[in-house]
Length: 257
Image 1 (cartoon, rainbow, N blue to C red):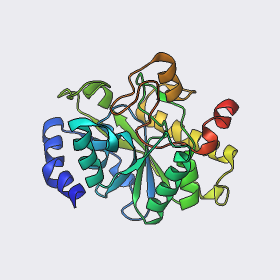
Image 2 (cartoon, one colour):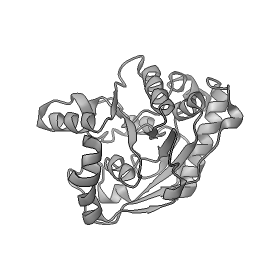
Image 3 (spheres, rainbow, N blue to C red):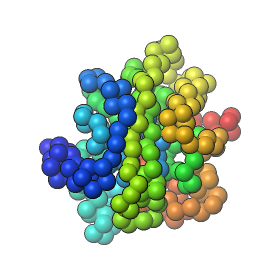
Image 4 (cartoon, rainbow, N blue to C red):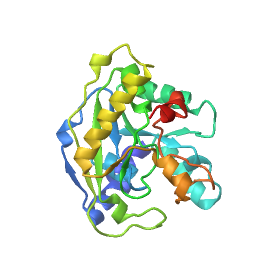
């Protein structure tokens, strides 16, 4: 109930009136059935503007820090994210990747839309980084299409670390054509297949967004540079805003390149 209230009355109309977001390719989002909306990730506000431009409900796998950060900001965040049905994932938990996959597949099998940031965290510099293979595993296990989504100019409107967004430029949401991976049916768990699928998704995101692609994980860059990890992050730890990894993606896949 809170989701639709915020989207249609409490928050959505204000976001549209003030920032006038634009959308392209909305017809590529299926009207029914489960599907993954795989997006680049430039700003905290991506999770507000992308669902706003979709008629259906979108559920994200959100980092647990949105739910357990102390203080007034943390309480407000917990009420908001829990109220709109977002699913918390603790990325410090050794079983977090497995739990994220299970939660994501459950949502998809219910015929819902699942929002995922394959990069695993916000881009530290506006470029598009290597995707983690959890998005491919979920698509295979649930048997659903993947719709690439490009967020446009949200990092300029609300850069990392800024508490309030700029009024301009207008943010944009660009939906690409659905990617059908049914040719890989039954191959969930094959890391080479999942890597190939993920790379295809990231290529489509690069084409849609016009971003420069970097063949390394954004979380590695943030740890190496000490970049601000954003809301709820703990010093020295990379906390992606939404889940995009599987267990084998943590070490073996990175070594394999």
